[in-house]
Image (cartoon, rainbow, N blue to C red; front, side, top):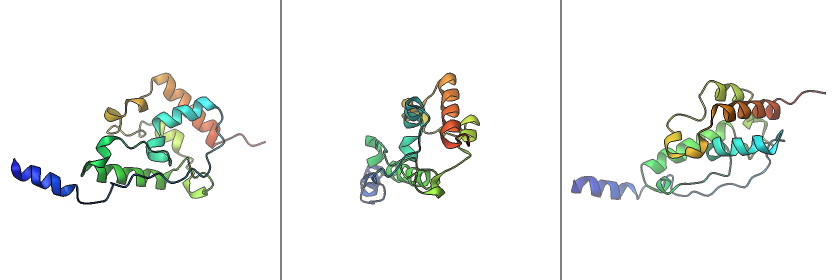
Length: 137
């Protein structure tokens, strides 16, 4: 038991995932409604924006490493705070939400704000479709 405590303490010396500064918000999509933005904020922003809320456990290794990795990967795939970068835009987002791939199952137990009712999920998908695929004039 003492060995595990010492090992856990030594893990805290590994810095990856301990500097939780958020980059500046550059540009967001032209949201179809404030409600859509609010749903996306609750369900997606922690990993897919520069407005990540870092919980207390994100400062404790090895959870900090996993959290940092997930945020880095999420932002690299889709970042609602850097919408000026065409590579960060993804047309498949509504389908990912519809299929249940987002938010991932392991995220939800510690982030109850990301749990959506069936109605909220439908509204989120509709809002994402209207925001990410606006009707062409």
